[in-house]
Length: 327
Image 1 (cartoon, rainbow, N blue to C red):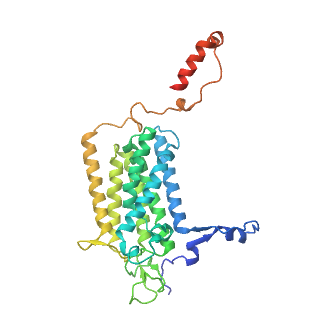
Image 2 (cartoon, rainbow, N blue to C red; image 1 turned 90 degrees about the vertical axis):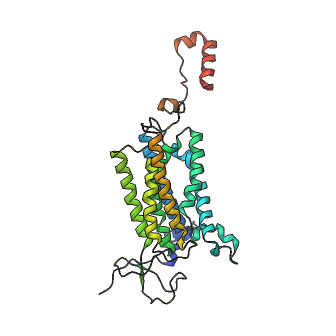
């Protein structure tokens, strides 16, 4: 009887030649060769899903539709830089031990750390939220479930890259890894199955997103408290998956760096909830800062029709319209 398992995708799936795909479909005009990495597609798909969820949540609270894009213009680039920098700095042997230093920028090979993305991405989100007049903590609460969904989708990039798997397992859902994979542990028999940590984290994150939305409907979690709950949920799950991963990692006191990062995330989440409960016991009346509120009427262009009074006194009406435009 064949043993159940999860196959790894073929190596050819890691890079998709868009031009070749179109030519195979009969598009002879597609003479170009544009390579797209599956890892990058997973990251982009996660970002797209996260933006849709966040937009719906912000609009439900009275925000301007798609104002999330204005904040994301800063948050996403900052997050990508922070995620890559954190990974590189916590895996120095992979980049600074005689290797090509340019590999630091090869994001498509994998290596994006969520903790670094949260740190710098949070800076970008804070600046972006200030520029659009939004409360930072309101934005953080709105994006929390979307972050978990984005992370869940992004984890499938590790599956395509056949990386970051866990210890050997006899479970039916063990992940198949070919023995020629550089990450395959020396001494293990060919056909050994491994814990699919990418799948564990994806399921944990989607479950967390559903839980955050459900709890947010049952209990009022504002002023950053829902984001604090996100940090705690993700931190707990990350500790569980990190402790069974086989990929090399820097350690502090014998504990993997990302486990420490997860513990810090949990503590920060607890601190946010405790501090904000004390500082803001009341409701958050708007996602916007006082005086920066958005209303549908404020998005309308000035009317091009004229009243009877304006037609009879054109100079006065012209001054009024100029004043309105300036405001």
